[in-house]
Length: 193
Image 1: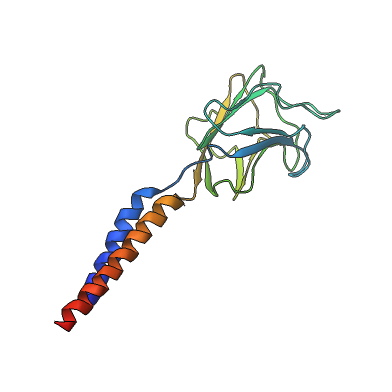
Image 2 (image 1 turned 135 degrees about the vertical axis):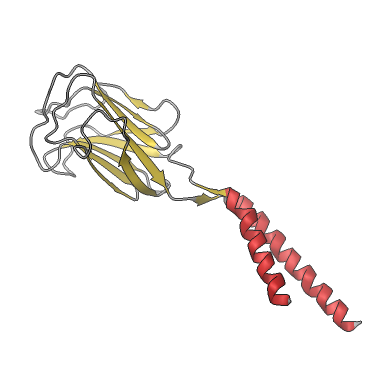
């Protein structure tokens, strides 16, 4: 009977905590955008650091090329769960062939862990042509070899690991502990009768 009661307490605690564990997305995180070429890790633009929030946009021209390099005009919006790129003033351009020719989004330490990056079906490029990479705090978009038609765009959907809210957890665990202590005292009192 006691084991059944303990099991019920554990299940009740889990059900109480579950709504407070959620994927918060990347809102509020610091992100640094660079264009890299000819390999990943070789930036050809000045790093541009912003805070992810509603309306975060790197407008065309905000990626400043280092001397000797050209960067296609692109507007990039970074949201809590997506990266949206819209090419402006291009006409069937093709990025210079290389191992990597694209964009790197570095999210600061302490940002939620990125667990997935997928190309949204609304992307104007052919399925499979946009090369994505991601790690816990970085997303890479390689456009090497693509032909970029006028008004083309990409949308990358991001997923992050669920993050518990510590104050809520602490309160619920304290409540469960108090309930456990009271139940033990009640059992001891009943045994003495």
